[in-house]
Each structure stands twice: as C-alpha cells, then as structure tokens.
Image (tube, rainbow, N blue to C red; front, side, top):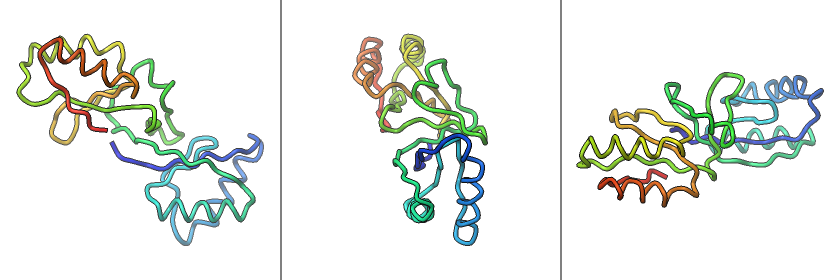
Length: 163
C-alpha cells in the first residue's frame, strides 16, 4: 500500500466543480493533484501538500489533513470497506490510515493452519491483496489487531503487523 495525503475541504456541493478548476489552474505550473473525491483532494507527498494548502488558502478555503493508504488495484474489498475508506472518482481505493492495521502471516507457519486462521479472520477483514513478494496482506480495523494475533495463535501461526 502506498501512503497518500488527503486534504478534506468544506464547501457546498454547488461550488465543487468550479473549485477543482481553480485549484487545478493554480497548480498547473508546479504540480498536479494525484486524485480527488468530492471534497477530498489527494496528494502524494509533503511538498505537494504544502503547494495545495497554499493555493486553497489563497482561495479562502480551510482543509483538514488525513493520512490515507492507497490500495493496489487488485485488492479484494469486503462489505466493511466503506466504513473505513472510499473509492475515488478515478476508481482508486483508499483507507483512512488511523483506522486500519495491515498484517500478513509470518513465514514458517503451516499452510493448513494459515488457511484455517485466515478463514476465521475473514469476517473482520476490510481488504486483502498480494504484496510484491506474492504474500497475502490482510487489512482490519486497528482496534482488532490483538484479536488477529489471538486467532493466529489459536491456529499455531504467527502474524507480522505491517503498520
């Protein structure tokens, strides 16, 4: 998962299209937004965040900052996903960083036990995907981290928290 920065702006719906045009025009020479969704402007790094904040400040707009996680395009989302994230207009899937934890099974755990533990965890998952090492990464509510450890332990497995 890639880290992104969300800037949540508070404007009436009727002003959104014109606002995006103004922001895009003001940023055209220096950088572009990575993505957006309604009142959420999304950038990739601190420098872009600073640039966008400067532009929206000139327009008299306030923004709340949020750390986001961009899911890979092949991530499998569960029905719980929408309580912890959103899908942007560009069809990118994001999770709110402060609400979620990601983990994977530690190497050396017997596959049969891993399969049973994963099945038990399934009802709590928000999403899952394959990482660059072709290992399954699971995402759950941050408050359920200890429960995920407990389930793994009950099946004689270990998990590694990634965040």
